[in-house]
Image (cartoon, rainbow, N blue to C red; front, side):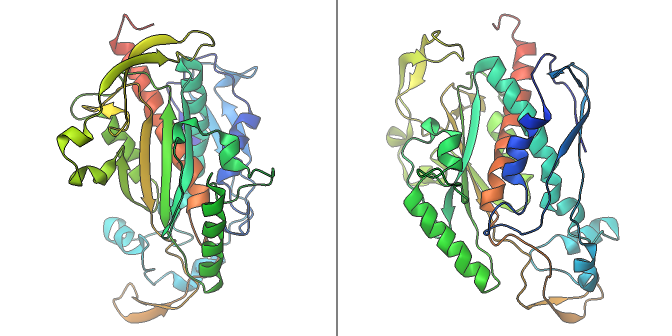
Length: 357
């Protein structure tokens, strides 16, 4: 269940709208993801009337239909390497061992549903668009020269019209990524990678100058997702070897889209975008570009060393149906969190600027 407060009235929203991204996140969508079969069918319980948001709180319910708690009964007293079992015990004194509880990626269904609403809001408000894709799996890196020009079709489909199950627009790299995932899956292992998320047509001026910098809120939102171990934006850690004269993006003017057809206007832009669309914690109007490093799936069917909750040495082999690589299903989760943060900051900005259009 997800409750969404603060949604403006009049935004078109249907179950079919929600299903687009929920289907991209759901289990069982290809042979390189978990084979758990969850349809993730949403039910809009409140906040929508005659296909439009009413301005009251939105309530969306997504039911579990293929849970198998017994898969976890043998490890209820063991600490899974890479999981939050130990830390949950230390924090709460006990834990729900049936699939990870609140530390499971299952809870991201609610985020993706909320992200659909946020995407529709920013698109209607200023033509904003958020897209993510798999930029790296293991040591295989995609080559994408202009991510801000990508379309959802390029990410979701191959040139021949078949599904792009890895969600990497570089088809040569995509095939190598799939082969890598299949290899690690066959030996009972997993592999990590990097997701890249781009937000375009975001107006300049969103974000706060100190504690609520939009870059900080975006990073926090991505770090709140399971398995994220690193976040960078723009040139990222590449700035460490650069001089200021190399790193600075030069300001100029150019025609910029306003989100309304035929209504482009002359505005200030930068010739390059090493700053990733944010300066001083505030958006510049250039595309926001982020990358998230996602660790390998921790649940493995191969035997590993661990200890029990009593501290006794033990071995563990995690049963169940787990993703050999989290990246393909991570993309809609990351998009959702980025869209939610942008929507929140736009609503805040509208309240601060009485002269805003």
